[in-house]
Image 1: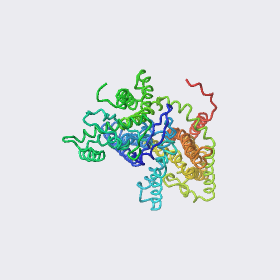
Image 2 (image 1 turned 90 degrees about the vertical axis):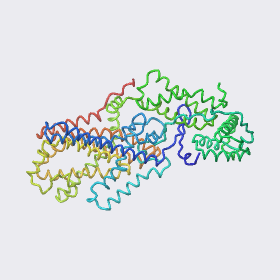
Image 3 (image 1 turned 180 degrees about the horizontal axis):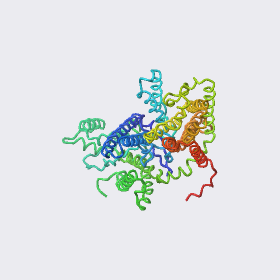
Image 4 (image 1 turned 135 degrees about the vertical axis):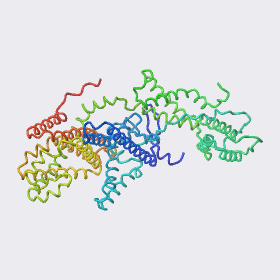
Length: 287
Length: 334
């Protein structure tokens, strides 16, 4: 397990006494989720605008042209207002506590104290977005002619402070997370992968104890990843490394994958057996 | 027992796999349609399956070296934890609770900040009023061009009076109201969020807002239109200004909690203050919607001073009672 993952791990002990070992979302994933959400909002806005135009041009000219234009403007302004103010809050209050962008990237919002995510906390965390990003952006984008350079620079610095805020604290908190008492964690939906030890194992491979003591848990997990990835070149290279290490030349006609599967199963059996006696052998350097 | 399942951890997994998949299916349905999409039996099965998965996770961490299984269980248990211990209240009952109890009590809890916010606004009004009364040129420093809407010391008294009763015209009222709502709601959210910078911008916003009002007043009182202006402003202003004062109070709450966290850690104090202030802000948006309706429609359609004052008075009494009237002690939770 790399150091990066460890520093992102936070303990959450359930009332049942089990540590869930939550992982904080990475800054890159969160930025990506936010950009996705902005894209979705933009698409929604465009779709609704087109639909409104079509609908109001179909409605006939009965109430008079200015009345129709009014109704169009009212619906559009209200939709824009609701979208801008409640898109994030609305989705994050829901059962998955994530906007579509966050869902796609396997993130969710959670209360920092491990309790229930309060809807007001979600509201607070998203109200801050107005000041973090939308306000300075509107200074930068809208009416750039009337605003002098100094204000643009101030807006840019302001934006920079808030956008980079999560990078300067341990828990990757945005200013809004700070106020809302929330943080963003990884909540991937994983599939249960097949158990590799269940693959056909034959007695043709009888490994000696010395051969099985060559590696530890870390190497076992790497081997598991290699077997799941099923990349022929990697399989071959890894198989050769292991054969050299345990001093067991390849038999004629022996397939790399079959050899590795058998070795994986035997190694796991050996390490799990030692685990039962309280010996957790972290990697090949441990005894 | 099949021949190939030689490892204990593999047997452990194959015995429980089906239960995990059942739990996963339940979770997927909850996340899609809320807890109410489950039948009674499934509701009972959920916590049981959750605890079984948790216990399997503990066992797997200690005895199994199958990373695929432990990772899966970790993700599954996290999802289940949030589903089991998360909010299951219906949105409608949550909304009811908010308007019946949550919002007024949030407003009451911020009474100190509300007073400060009110005093700051009044300070702005007083300063601008005195300055503009002594020298009309000050008016231009307080009023942004678009807000003044052609009303300035240079206008004639007649045109000022005309503006109080016939601005805009009947067409375009609804657009005006929608625009006001979205604009004022944004200002309120700014007042709240800017409190983050230790109150400073919120205080400035409140004083500035007061200044605009004071300058306006000075101009109209000088022309002998003070009473008429009051009717024009306060038909919606009672609601709108109260909402802005409350939004300012929410911002002040956050700023002071960050600056002076007291006995809590700064983070905890900020989170607690944020939750309280957000309760006020959510309601403020509703108030501003009402104010926008009053301003967009009421003010243009009701042109008698008496009726305007009546509406202003009624809204003041209504809001005051709603927020501050003592209420019977909360009933026992059902």
